[in-house]
Length: 185
Image 1: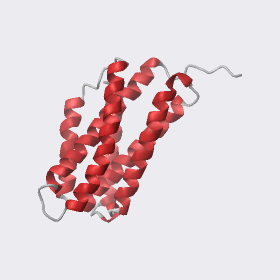
Image 2: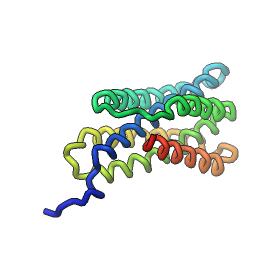
Image 3: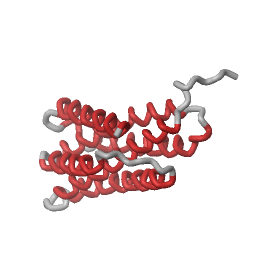
Image 4: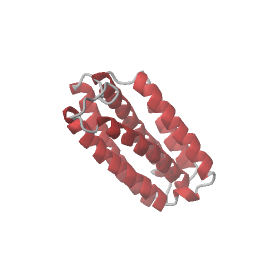
C-alpha cells in the first residue's frame, strides 16, 4: 500500500471549495435557464424550445438543491459572488435567447462542456477517498446530466448559431473565470 501525499488527498478546505463552486455553478445554470425562459415564454412559436429548456432547468434545480443542502450541513461558506452570478446568469440566458434558439442552445453547449471538464477534475481529485464517496457519486450523476444537456443542445442546432465558435470561447472563458473566483471567494 502506498502512502498518499497531501497533494493527492483532498483537504477539507479543498472539499469546501468544491462544494462552494459547484453550488455557485448550479445556481448560475438555473439562472441562465430562467433568463432564457423569460424570453421564450413570451414569444409565440417557441413552446418546444421552452419545454426543452424547462426539462434541463429541472435537472439543474435538483443539482442546486443538493448543493444547497451540502452548504448547510457541511457549513461551507457560499461564494461572495452569488449576487453577481445571479444577475450574470440571468443576463447570459436572456441575451442568448434574444439572439435565437440556436444561440440559446450554443450557450448551453458551451457551459455544459466547461462544467463537464470541471466535474471531471473534481472526480479525479476525489478518486479513492471513501470519506467523500457520497460527494463523488453526486458529482458523477450531475456530470452525466450535464453531458446529456450538452448533447441535447448540440442536437437542437447549437453549432448552427451565428458566431458559434467565438460565442463558445467567450462563454467557456467566463465559466472558467467564475469557477476560479468562486473557489477562492
